[in-house]
Image (cartoon, rainbow, N blue to C red):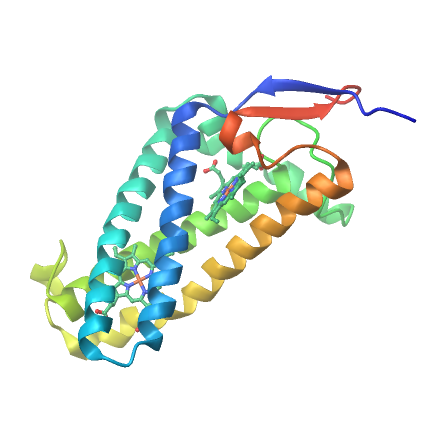
Length: 205
Ligand code: HEM
Ligand code: HEM
């Protein structure tokens, strides 16, 4: 029987891991609250849940700002430059290899492109969400500019509603990819954002 030899390295710092957990939990709660609020029949209950959705939205906004700042001042593996890997993306395209064995230390190069797109999408959710807070609930930092401006509501509610599908798709793909990497490549990947350690096959870089 052949044993797989793995080496481990400390890669993800505690603040990055905390921000990952904070933002991931809030994304899940925002998805849940909007799905349930859409199904509610009674106006009062729906309004209360949309208010909770908004508060969760503020908390996610804080998490996104913190992640952005950590990408500028944090350690190497948390920096935006670590996610920006155009040479690896071109290589993957040339070799038509979109699900490669995790090898180098740090973010998986193909996944990092998806993470960047995901951050773009949630920032758009946060900005359109703040506009909807002003229009629908008369609250938030955009109240002066957009308070109860129902004429322009669809400008914000349409993208906010559409992008929700992308957020849902990202969460599903991210979780499935983590499980598939572990099963196909035999590397404990998912725990990396909890323990901070990455495991790699011993003979690889
Ligand atoms: C992953 C993130 C999010 C998801 C999946 C999500 C999902 C949704 C969905 C599906 C709607 C209903 C849109 C419609 O049918 O018109 C909605 C409404 C809304 N969202 Fe979000 N949202 C997210 C983030 C945010 C954030 C960050 C904020 C605020 C900063 C926010 C504030 C709002 C507000 C104020 C409404 C309107 C509620 C009302 O009708 O009173 N959302 N959201
Ligand atoms: C369900 C909501 C989740 C969302 C929205 C989410 C989002 C993200 C994002 C945006 C990144 C990029 C990290 C960065 O900012 O540098 C990331 C990476 C990562 N996430 Fe999640 N995540 C979720 C759940 C999870 C769960 C449950 C696990 C497993 C414990 C996990 C494990 C990881 C790992 C290991 C990475 C780094 C992978 C790599 O090296 O490329 N995530 N996630």
